[in-house]
Image 1 (cartoon, rainbow, N blue to C red):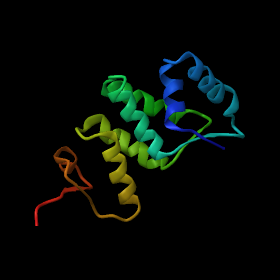
Image 2 (image 1 turned 90 degrees about the vertical axis):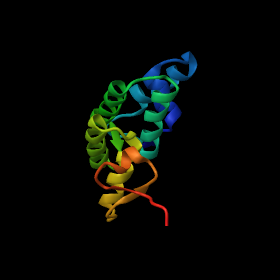
Image 3 (image 1 turned 30 degrees about the horizontal axis):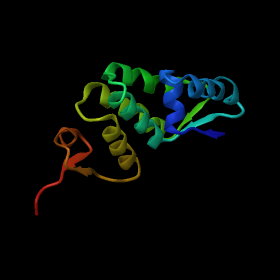
Length: 134
């Protein structure tokens, strides 16, 4: 298995650096195989979504497409895959960030009743509660 860093995944997706994109293409298209899968951790997945949104100014539709592409890639293992699918569905229709939905779902699967946040958008959703003054 080959662990993938955010910058390698981003270079492969956006193809904006000729040298690094060529290397990323080789990794994704030749080095990663059914017997040597690529691993995308939930941290990397959240960073990829954030970078594509912030640095490349892509809208939610493109972010959804990218996460689906990675989830459906035959030779890519996604950490917390089931949580990522649920977070993706919540993100598609919700107002919070993808990372918020993923965090809440992972926390829930690990036994947390809620995820406390200062993010008012996230706090409106299930599995979140707004942190309040004492």
